Length: 220
Ligand code: DX5
Ligand code: ZN
Image (cartoon, rainbow, N blue to C red; front, side):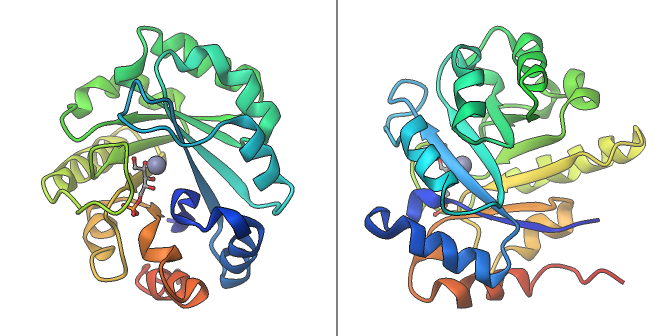
């Protein structure tokens, strides 16, 4: 299995985002995680398309765009045009899960569905064959710098077992409260795409990226 680090730019220094992005690039993080918040689905507002476009001009890395917005189907084409490679939306945020997955694929992006800590994995099981990734939130979405909710690890383990039983190599992503000291917990449970915000951007960015990636199982 391929293990991927996707640093969350929510925690970067926006006045020099280009420099921070260059550092995560140089240290070897494969993806970039981009958190879009609308102040409705979550009690916080982050940024939208113009900011993503400016990030896009700073790197060629894979953009993993995590939409924490209601009715994400309204903006799929706009996020694609802003530079998204993968678009992830919450099953709790729309009554049109199937249509949204289809729309994401139609615009040429990979599709992912996310669940909050209180949402059961049963909500995503009907769509497993159709998405490239499932995001299991390990904090309540809305803010960086929160503590990893240990109970969410079981959902990762169950999902990986179900994917394996169905012969699927779907990416399973965890997001929230992950750092070098606990990343082995979700990884051992079956997560292979790791988001980290504050654990990457606080202090020595390149050193932080390497410290987290060193914990990934080595390919043999
Ligand atoms: C939270 C966001 C996360 C956040 C993670 O709603 O989805 O991506 O930036 O931040 P840390 O790694 O600091 O918990
Ligand atoms: Zn996120």
